[in-house]
Length: 222
Image (cartoon, rainbow, N blue to C red; front, side, top):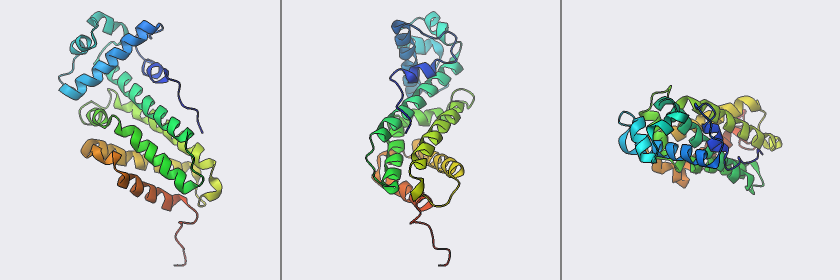
């Protein structure tokens, strides 16, 4: 199982492509305040009404300070998406690291539950990022996040390979993660309350388990 991310990993990842990367605690706090203000502005005013001036005012910093780190609104949104997705990955890794599942079926349930629970914490922000923000201004980092989750699930399944059906592990992992991601995105956009519904966890777990588990494979002679 991959080790959980360190506390500052999300902020470090989010500032990987900014104009000036913060080094001191005070600078990191400034960047964190700017990104938090960006999220708040998006949620309350939408993408079009969110400007760098309004973000700076909300964050309590000068516009010059904001531009020290972020050259434009697009870079802010990219950093915000990166920070948010890194937090989701960190929460998932922490939950899975403490999982006590003794078999694949229970483990799949823990994995799906952790994935949905992590996204449910900020479902409204995910909805705004998908519905209002241009694709080249932040949401393209979703691909990197999904790759991280694919690797996490691949490690999880590889440790339980004796319980799996005779499937190609790489293809199976890719298909399952992207399939579940589609369900999560749909829930965030249309019915975020479902992410906290145990019935959704049970349904998605059942779909995945039927595909993965050796004992759940359909009898070809039936």
